[in-house]
Length: 498
Image 1 (cartoon, rainbow, N blue to C red):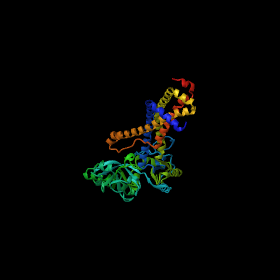
Image 2: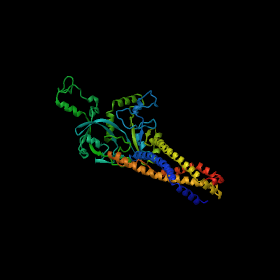
Image 3: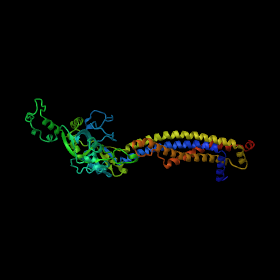
């Protein structure tokens, strides 16, 4: 028999038992729909995660770490033991270096890193928290140094004003949250206003020769008591003014770029998130003059141990390195390792993320595979029932010259038609389920939170093609025993069968 004849016989047999074939196909449809739906959900989670990283500009930047005073101050402790490498007052994201750095990340090191092929720029991380006064209100705020000019994606969108004009300007860029905290009606009202950094230390007095300081007895003008308590209101005002350490003019107010899909919300890039950004040099001067107590002790211990000489700079704890193309990220990191620096990149987390999603997809696929396994028993049962009903027909076919191979092919074709039909319809059902689930999630979860539509499922071509082929393979395997049993039927006995 030709291929066409075998196919025509298989289709005719299925048409004669429409209900049974339909019910058998339903098992395949359900199994394929479950597999595709669950796999597409896992792939959708992974795609949205990677899309969010890409939208937040995390693949073009990395953090580089140098040897810091906190690590140099610690002695007699196993370096393999986990501990906070920067136990200062500031807390941020848990960026972990891939190795223990052996070099100090100073200005010379930053210039050397900037010369690495593929590096766009290097920005040191100088951050601290201090009390600030703005618009008559005093609040503690996070401050970070910013390179001027700055190519970071953090400074692309402004609600009002512009970026700091010069590297030595006493200007600051603030967030829209700070303008609300300070009581400005709108971001435009904050432009040109001053923001004061408060301290109890007199920076101008400390910069002079200590011998030139006035004797405290000479400063007593009769306005204080024996215990030094101010007696006049004017002295109170003078004391209040003395807490102003440095004044900056607000040049710009950052805005949140409206991003749809997976990239909505969240700060751009690996640059530390802060409420106030000032020039790097100003941030460095303030951080060195107003070091927290633990930082002062760490610096003293590092110099006392000889790991940091009196003439050496303590350097920066970390810096943000941006590359022109994510493709060169690996080569740049290798070069940083050779130079003795540690680094962190979001790429480090991708392998772990892929492993997690592989486990999730495997579990979800296993649940769907169980459904398809149950459907395969239904296919085998249908084929066996078909043999019992068509025993006499099979005997006639063998009597007129049909070979065992051709008898097997008829049953294989019947199972293949069931598997192919169930696979195609199952994929279409999974596509419909994904669409309905997305609409329901947007209607009842995302929309009430004013979030944009997010596709939680991913249905790439290889998934539905693979699901159809898998259903086809399972169906054919389920027909192996029934086909072999049909081929072994004795034609003489078959002709006597009622």
